[in-house]
Image 1 (cartoon, one colour):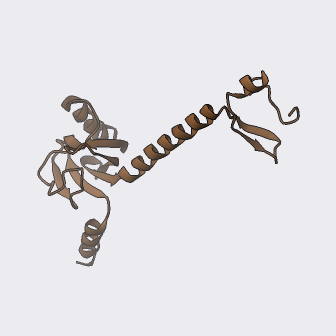
Image 2 (image 1 turned 45 degrees about the horizontal axis):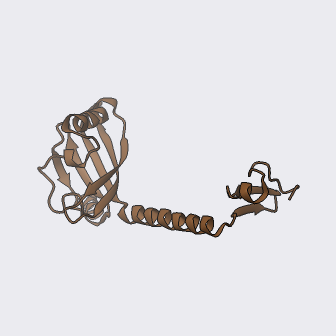
Image 3 (image 1 turned 90 degrees about the horizontal axis):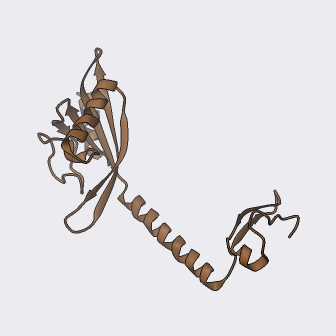
Length: 173
């Protein structure tokens, strides 16, 4: 009973979606739903909507590899929504080896949507900064004074000096 209570607490409070699936892709257990991945009760449904691949055969092959190779599989999954938003998940499928047989696998998914959105915002910010620097005719660079090297030299250095970034060394400049 004590171990059952611990298991229930772990499953109910885990922020990850945890599924137990069989060889046919049937979801036998789901600890809870997750926005972007089925939302409600998933037990009884198929896992194929949550696997990478362009079609059913590719998705089925992906699942079969986990069972045949007895090796975990990790992947990122994007799930477009009807409202235009896309949810992102970091997923792992691990085979459950019991007395030498693999009849079940554990599928876990962590919502990484906020991370993907932050990465996209950073890329946009970097692109805006790059365009602003180029438009200003500036040459950004990074000089490491401890090692007396340039870690970065903008491409505009050629127009400014006639030398390429590779020709510019701290001892000469």
